[in-house]
Length: 359
Image 1 (cartoon, rainbow, N blue to C red):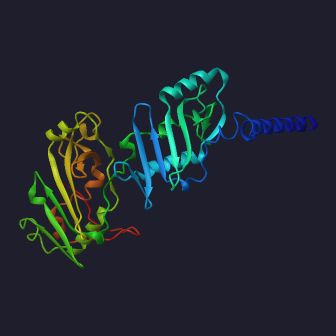
Image 2: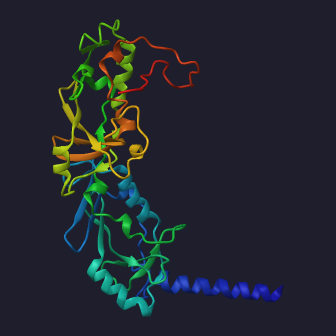
Image 3: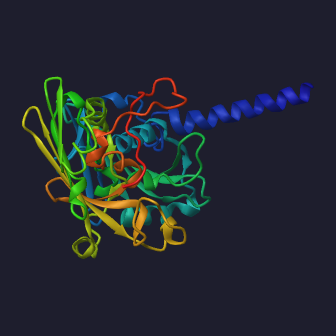
């Protein structure tokens, strides 16, 4: 027992010595400054700048509580959170070994990603470079600006490359919101179908009154307008997101020109702001789940899970999910049908929500 205690004491002393001399001792050339990759006060970060050696860069800045990109687009909140959580948790494991030093330095010089963080007064909080994976694969080589020694850096509980988190691709950073308008802020919504205009409609609200205008052959012929359905429908335009951006794909413009437009969606707010989206079918491809099995809603020549949309004044082409947008792409006559109570109503779910069956 006494020998075990002696061994434990020696190990503890050794561990403390390594920590003291590498990370704490201020006169050590590879001390705390050169190993200071952790930013604990992420609330103080107001600007993020990330750049690669091939002149690709991203600038995100917090303005009035909202993170904005230099392109004047909103930044994707999850991407900002990823960067801030990474710099909060990342820590130096140990200096790059002597044998790996030359390779690490050359890699940082050739392919290093520069990361700059600033506070609200545009004062630099930290600047560091992100290199490749360490020689043993346990972490990522990083170098503090002005330092001589790169370190192997990692976040607790994660073994691998952190480099991918510091993306400079606009498609990774740009907010994926297509629509995010509260029901009370909507004045009117127009959904127009190219192939089947008989299903098109315009829904408007004046005070507490709703009006739905469509082809009389399939609206008033069905019955009286269902104001409750119109009211519920107005709530479907909050937090409507796309799956991702397709900007920059060389053939995308040609694909859109050759693809059948399915519908258009126009929204006007009570303040007069307008939003527009063009919805296109996605041609059937090798990943389409309905390639071997048909779908009751989507024509057999199109993908059943995804569609294209052109948004932001024709600036962006995005990938959208049918599961999300079929809730919006209703038929005119549905607003003139009577509600059918559900046999089993789940708690917290409105009794008369619109149920999509067939397009």
